[in-house]
Length: 105
Image (cartoon, rainbow, N blue to C red; front, side, top):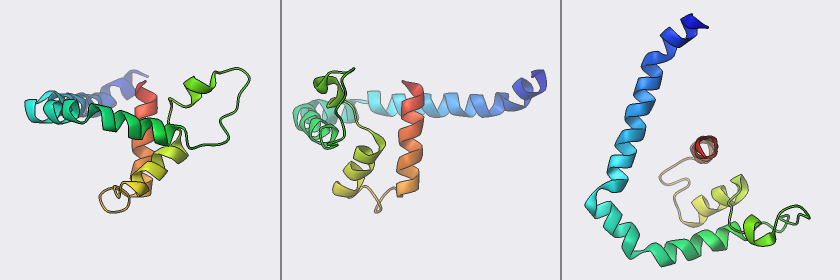
């Protein structure tokens, strides 16, 4: 276990730096301003894609809650619809991004 911790330390440091870089980018004035300007339409698009899965019927969770979450299929569908996939990011990379975002929450 100690060997693993020692050998994985550089990877953890790289990941920490990457997360900081992404957060710094998101916090930068132009990007923050862009997200603020388009907050309402972005939220509407998110809600639209979150509500697409007709299998979201559950007796244990509210429908409003289920329609506020994107599952993997909806996330991939969003990527194709917005021409993020495959023009900028492959479907495999979108899956990787989704799983990493899910792991961070």
